Every structure is written in C-alpha cells, then in structure tokens.
Image 1 (cartoon, rainbow, N blue to C red):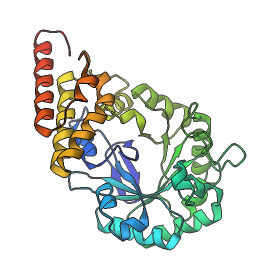
Image 2: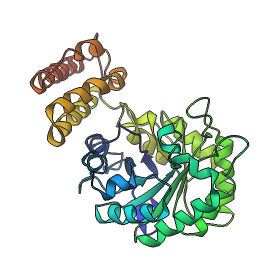
Image 3: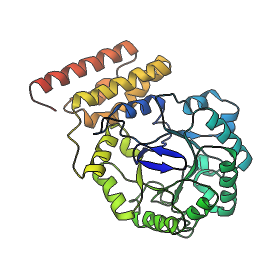
Image 4: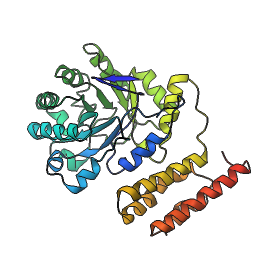
Length: 342
C-alpha cells in the first residue's frame, strides 16, 4: 500500500495516462485482473489527458475521456494547461466528478500540447508552474500530484529542484519520466535522473516519488525501484495489450518470485471483456474499430493464433466480432485441454 496525501492506494503499481488508449473500458479490464492476494493488482489508474476548457464546457469527447465509474476507483484525472485559474476550476470539476486524485501534466512532449504552453512546456517556467500548482492544491480537497520529465532538454534540467518546490506548495506525489522533452520516447529512460529526483525530494519531503519509463515486465519494475529508490512505478506503453502486467509486477515486488503465467484463456477473457465494455459505453462502430486496432497489441500474448491480426481486420459488425472472439476462445480452450497451451 502507498499513502498519497489522505488517500491510501492498494498497491504501488499504477497505470499511466496514455492518450487514446487507457479509457474507462480498458481500465475496467485492468481492474478485473486480481493480484496474488485476491484483490486488484493495480494501485491507481488515470484518465486520458484532459483539457480544462473542454472539461468546463462539458465537451462530449472530453466527457468520454473523463468518464469513470464506481468500479473505477481509485482513479486520477490528469489535467493539462497553462492558465492557473482555469486549471483550478477544472480541478474542482474533476473532484466533483469522481477523481480520487488530480494530476497536473508537466510531462507530455506532444507538440499540440506544448505549443499551448501545457505539458512539459511547464518545465520551462518553474516559478509559474509552482504558482499554478499552489492554486490547484488550494482549490480542492483531494490530493494533487504532478507528472514531470527530467527537463525540456539537457541544458534545462529541472528534476533535482522543481519536484521539491512543488512539494513545498502541497503537491502530494511526483511521478517522473526518465527522459527529457527533447528525447520524446527515444533512447532509454535515465534511471540515474529518476534517482536524483528521489534524492532531491526525500531530502526535504516525505512524499512518494513514482518512476516511469520503459517498464514492460516485472523485472523492469523491480530494477526501476532498486536502482532509483522510488516508491512505486507507473506503466504506460508496457500495459498496452497486457492488462495483467500489474498482477505480475505486484507479485514480483511483494514476493521476489514470478507470478504463475497468466493463462491464455484468461488473456482471451480480457479481450472479450474489453470489447463488451466498449459495446456498453460506445456505439457499435467505435467498439468494433477499437478492438480491431487493439488486436495488434493483444496478438503477441494470444499466440499461437495464425493470421489473427490479418483476419480481425475484415470484421465490420459487433455480431461478427463476437463470433470471431468466441471461436478464438473455443480454440484456446481446446488447446488448453490438449495440453498445448497454458
């Protein structure tokens, strides 16, 4: 368990906000996978990045991105922007609409976000960013956190100083991605930079620091924590197509042993649940298209299944998709019964 402000999180393995991927339908699948203690393995999930102006005007697309449910708890709503007053108002909206915690995105390197002075562009104005954090913290009664990068580039690193300054004004947790904005997602995450962030924060504050970047398996999470001294991990791209990764991470962190392989039939169950969640929440066309696209991520974990990625692209309707997935499940069950696959 991990304490963030006045909130106790069940584990220290978190699902990152990733634009276009980790919506409510997928987050509920992640939560359906139990850890070795019989409870959910993921400690905190996050919504997509949320534009504060669109939240306040209750734009239809943004309402979907911000969607949550009683089963989706604890959940963080992540805001991006540069206007302190609007960010504070959006934080109030998030609190009123089910956010357990609220995160200020200071790490997104995408041009359409940074060109509006949001995301990692905030790292270029530390004083203004600290002032914004103070206003957001004072606007709500739930913990406010920050997700940062090491800096804009190697000539403008802020990871040793800004996190502690954010904690000074009430930020309850800092997540640090071990790259600069200039790096985007190239190269390897710099664990030494994350370790320096931990050292800088812990010198003055007793708040959690979460490591992020290149976590694709349980060993990566353990290495991140061992090398950096961080309090937990946040998984982004590594959770695409394997919602059970948190089961593996938490088991390894808590026991020092690898979890038994997640059965292929259970992996298929996750795909079917994802599709049915989409059907419950979105129109048929979106549900079918989403699963067709996501199958490229699921496919490596469902093998052997020849031509899976090719065949799914011909599916156009929900009825066809249900039939396709049901036949896939039957195939997997038969192979499992024959001892050909776990």
